[in-house]
Amino acid sequence: MATLPAQFTSMLARHPEFDGLAAALCGTPPEVSVRLNARKTDTTPQGYVRVPWCPTGIYLPERPAFTFDPQLHQGLFYVQDASSMVLRHIASRLSEEAGPMRWLDACAAPGGKTTAIADALPDGSLVHAHEYDPRRCAALVENLERWGCPATAVTRGDTAQLSRLRDFYDVISVDAPCSGEGMMRKEPDAVAQWSQGLVQSCAATQRRILQNVWPALRPGGVLVYSTCTFNTTENEENVLWLCNEFGAEPVDMGLTAFEGVVGDISGHGLPVARFIPGRIRGEGLFVCVMRKPGDAAPARVSMPRKFRAATLPDWLNGDFTGVADDTRLYALPAANAAEILAIPEARTRGIYIGEVKGRDIIPSVALARSTALRRGAFAEYEADLATALTFLRGEVLHLGTETPRGIILLTYREHPLGFVKNIGNRANNLLPDNRRIISQIPSPLPQPIFI
Image 1 (cartoon, rainbow, N blue to C red):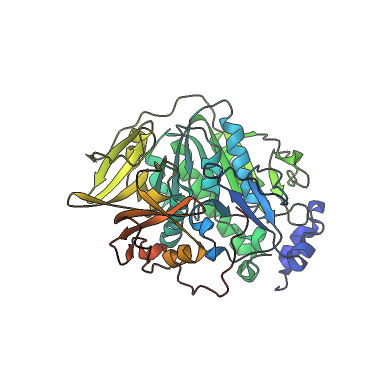
Image 2: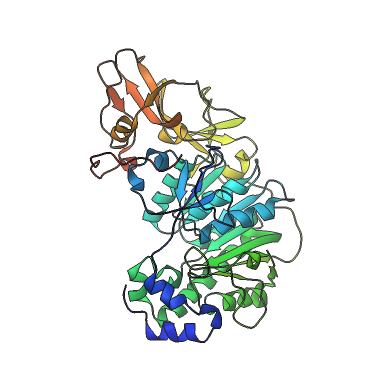
């Protein structure tokens, strides 16, 4: 571990709440935690410690080879820092009496907080995930695909474009890019790059993002602001700026009731929460919930461009609307279809069903991993671990002469993994290149963790 910057440790010394933090950052290993997908599995692992603020989060004793666990690719769990799982708790609290809602996650990649939010929202809700960076956006799309959330849309670009959806969202979360102080234990680069100048630059960027998204929040709606850093410049001072600039009203979510979670350190008495390594089992996180003044229903939607209606095959459970974009077929939850289509320039929307080729539809891996897939729509083949990993490598499979020809849903431990096309002497792999494991499979095969 690199030596912590002197200016950083000086800042810590000014606040007794940070006592022991420097030692935790330098002398203790990061925690390993995962969040289970309750919409896909009701398995309750035994012998694991639960994350206090997340009923589906558990700590692992060590970090296994996640890449070679098919259950990760199936979306049965997500590897996520325990502190970040608090977004699930917040989403659950906000939706207790509100019912279905429109939620924008404005800095969403790689998708951990987005999937945590989607887990907690009631049916009929819409989650719009937005990301600026192209590579991180690709990871976001893949992780949402694995998680199997039907009522989602993903966009990419500057957050300035989001202001066009004025008064559209009930909730907006901004997990803002920051100086990364909370990641110093996990990421050596966070130590090397830190400076007071970086802190000031990040604070300015955070305010620009908040200013961009504020018009998209309906009056009476809620903004959830978070960073993975400790200083007040990027945290309490930005909260106060929102209050002074836009009349934001901080809301007490009671998060400091969790053991080890610290409140405001600026002296302003704001209802904020800090997750500090050494006090809690997780990395650094700051979060504050604020309400926009006024009260109004979300704005009515208007679709900026037309989509071609399309007939869906009988592959899904539930009520869906079919749309096609060139040769790609999508299924949108009927309750959210107009809202999803109103989001301009979406990279993906709803469930990507597959590619239309003549009279055929080549089903996608997104369909296989969707929670809306109708089991029984395809012939299935239950793979062992070696076969599942062969599939994830993108290699040809041999399923045996008793397996029917045509499109086959490959399953592992009875959960969908993806599609192959069995032609008799072999099964062609339909997993896209960008979804495949590049690393060589180790020998002996690593065993899946717990589900």
